[in-house]
Length: 404
Image (tube, rainbow, N blue to C red; front, top):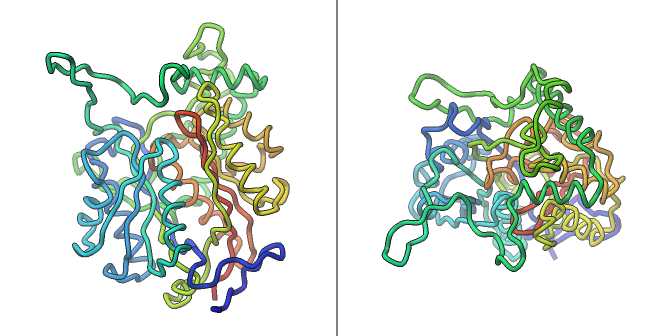
């Protein structure tokens, strides 16, 4: 049997080295508000520079890529994975597949690629997600006479289940789990503060792939979401956004963003052959379904399952990244898991940086690798989790450490 390497975990041997998935590099674009600096770039144009940057950083030969697995939620008129990989200069022999699990698409693409490795695909994979909400195709059903009937969002579940809008579901979660308006606003303000501090400290620089701005007027290197002038007083003035009696507002909800993120994932054996110095070992993943009326708690259900399977408690986690679509659902999930909000999203989250739908799950993993690398030589137990439209959630348990 091939050697298992240095990653024995809690007495349970991982997969053999030629089947043990490990993430060795991750990149993302800046996250910019819809209609902003990246609004002229279509999905494949956002993603292609990230893929090319990953190949350059790892010195991975393009023809050594076994597959490109990309998540996308609002559509890019075709297989955006294949389109982007060719745009990035990868050879025509490299295939691509696009995954749609709505907000979870980027994380689920990484999960799928990790399972390809675990199933014996001892190659290198590029996996992640992309969303250009600014350029997404207009969507319409065909009417009886063939006329278009435009709609704003996809139907997530049958109407017999309610199929609530995400904001309505966020209010439902706040009411069910007792998440006050004050807690939501305070959490949102803290997310902006952390993101601003992280940007000032240069924490995002190593993970961002600069892009040419819309109109070719310059290079975009920074996220544009964090608001330095945001205060508790400003947040308190926002009215309820989805119901008169609700507590969810525009101030404690994320904003739509354009962006892309991807990782290089391969086997531990191949990572060593490539000379990778460190990475995130994929210990376990899970996806769970929940009541669509409370769709925001899906991440907590998935995370609880993967932690239980791996014999890990929430208190043992060193790093946690959770997609902050709404402060209410974020706080509810953390409460359900027994996680201290102070230990989650240490550099801010989607409330400050924005939610690029299909890319957001991959952004979480990119952030975890960057955070882990701030303390080289120290192993980190990390969790990425995201709640998903329609009442689902995906979580991945990862361990950072040296590869050699």
